[in-house]
Length: 319
Image 1 (cartoon, helix red, strand yellow):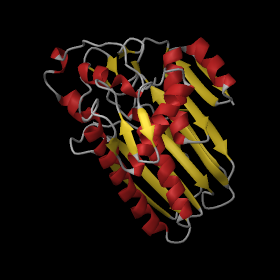
Image 2: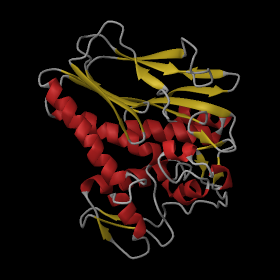
Image 3: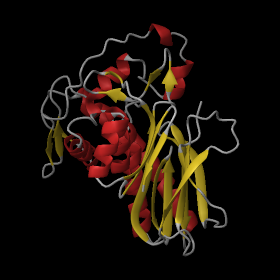
């Protein structure tokens, strides 16, 4: 089972040089490349998504991330550059949000039943019987990253889950690599985490449509806002986090409050953030949901982030 992304590229008149849609990281993905060698670069990008998923996935027993988690408490573990980058960004995000964005909620995610690819979670007959014993997340404070030796040491009892930050960072990496390979413009959409750079085939701006997840899927027009970005941008991103998707069992959802280890109790149901990178847009969107509408507005304005916030009955836009 899959759902439409909450933010999408709006293309009324511009046709891409090459594009590819596929499934990866448990979601719908799309790559669009403009310029010469676009077909080859699209394939390169799709292959890179698979490599990053194999490195970062918590649903693949053979992933490098799962190997690292299994070695928690044993001291430094040699890792690849991709995994080192991911955990380094996780730690930066944890510090920047005062611990609200916390990748160490993995035990709670598993306890609440989100212990495998989401399609398998909702298909599982015994989902209602899954234990909900949860506890406060341990945090990233004792995680040790040594960039010189390319090692990471996780404390005993601590595991990390890339969650949405993994998709945002993956999109960042792929956009940068494809642009460095000679593309004139590129957009990567990993389940609604959208990152773009360069120009969309002309001098026209990038236009990202924000969908309203409060509306049923069969509603013809679910677009509530368009965000525009100038052509030629170095690197831009839009990400959405919502409690209305990836819902299972008795209303459980994937946004976990690290302060309790339980699903977030918040009046916000959707947060869309525009930022300079995909990973920071994702971090900010999740943090906004955890803060709730009043505090989220203050925090986002302090961080000068364009945002669209929704409760069940209202919407706030700050551009």
